[in-house]
Length: 290
Image (cartoon, rainbow, N blue to C red):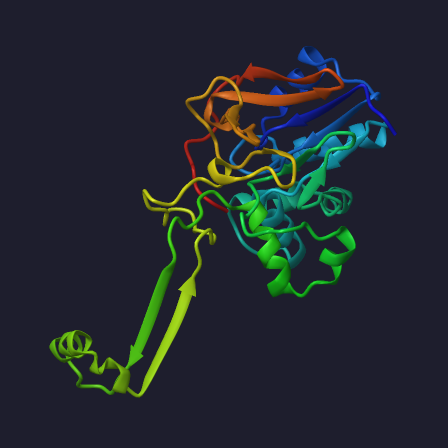
């Protein structure tokens, strides 16, 4: 199936009014267009569950749609499925409003979407530089939790290791003091300790949020385009007034929930354009992982 336009929307975080304005007033979306959301519909903003329900209503009315799973969408889905009605806070409030139909709708979202008719990929946060290929939906469904979690980094990645790190863990009996350890390391006798464990984090490995160093690059700065041009959200470019451009990627999260802008990339046979609208207000100052 071909589409007049493919509209890729960045992180909405409950900014329902802005999403409706973007789609209906600015872009005049029709059922001849394919709508793709880049994830994080929920949390921080005022109308997360209502935004999910608005999208579900549009899909039920015939709007072609593909959803990418964001880390906030995933954590809310897991909370709603496993909390058994317990807990407090934002996720508990969302879970109380999300219906079974809403949860089933969110469960159709994918870790990434290959854009039909274009050499492009939509993912929530990014791709890891050591990935040689992307597994199919069928392969992902058969994976165990540990293996699946490796690919789920596409929901969270920002920075990657800029150099290899080797960690050595030495175990010794109680009473061994720091001075003894320093002497042992200096003269090389540490190899005689009862147990030494080494772990190596390779160049390009995932760096957790807040642990990045100045030598750790943002993933899109070093991405070589192997999966096509990547459209992504997750990292809010709060000083930007238009989508953030990289050699082979475009960042679409312009911090709408922080009072900045909601952005969309529009793909046609002629190329790519961007549409941006300002947020009606600042809804959150809370910038943290979920």
